[in-house]
Length: 435
Image 1 (cartoon, helix red, strand yellow):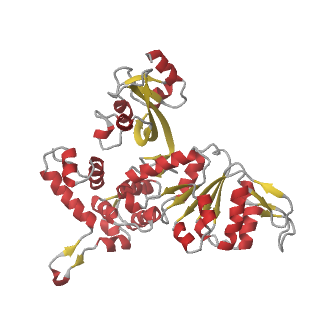
Image 2 (image 1 turned 90 degrees about the vertical axis):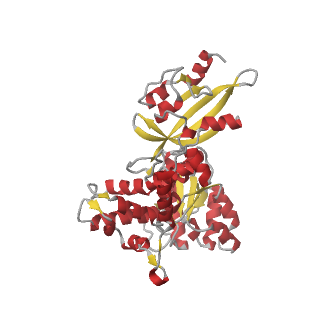
């Protein structure tokens, strides 16, 4: 395959795309890719990691998954989510890497196609999901996959993990983005209210129905319906819901005419629906209808390294934007498990900022539950104190960083973790290897 053929292939792609050889050097590039990055691409000289990350080494040597490296190993298409340094700042991209072979079947290079993720950011940005942790990136990858299809999505995660934000992202990234996004709160819906809210009603259908009203399902035609806390729908209403989802047809309360609505289905719950199925509290057929593509939303405890960025983000977009956390206060926040997840973090940030008399938010200004968790407990006899495991890990890693003289890869091997995990832990505690 000659250079002109490759360049023609790249030009035909409407997303940012490049063709790179196994040594990471860009051999062909389309204009969309050039427009994406501030750094000029020099064909035959520039490497992909220099342009996208402004790094001097490939991604796998900097603590990130490298799609090219994975492609080399598997000889199959590979996709990963990365943070790229673009002309508009640090932007999330879903990278698809494809091996390109010649007529004899030998791999001559790799095609890289970028899909910009507009609903998430590595830095503080209003109305976007914020994070850089591995579990957060994995969630973004799943969202991007699901958004391209029509499959029913079930969002599973603890209360406060941002399920509605994810549902909105699925809608905004789909072909239905210009149509309605309708949220249906399942908690507390009685049977009569369930039917009238979902299906609408005709004039005179019941006392007080002085006119007809469209239901939420009809309003959502062409768009996305988000059933929040689907696990709270009582058994007797689950049959009607299943019929709606299977036929996408319904009848308004008091009406005779059968109506249809074309909608994408997204559901969310903090409950274990499979356990509910086993107990007979949730219909099995309904579960398999809504759980076409389950997505796990990580708790804040699973992505603790995102806490500093999220805390800064909540401060920046509050009335206390001029304030900031002291290092000690931030370390205390990072140790707290946040059972209420992101919603609780936002509340703690706002409460702490309000309590702080100075521009600096000190540890003593933090919410009571955070301080209570961080207080050391005395062991019988007063001979020792018990500290949180995270604190013990931080102290140990600080000691290792001060004394270890090998490479990050060597240290990771001795600690029994991957290099990427080591980088994450060092970043979380603000540590660096002395060497």
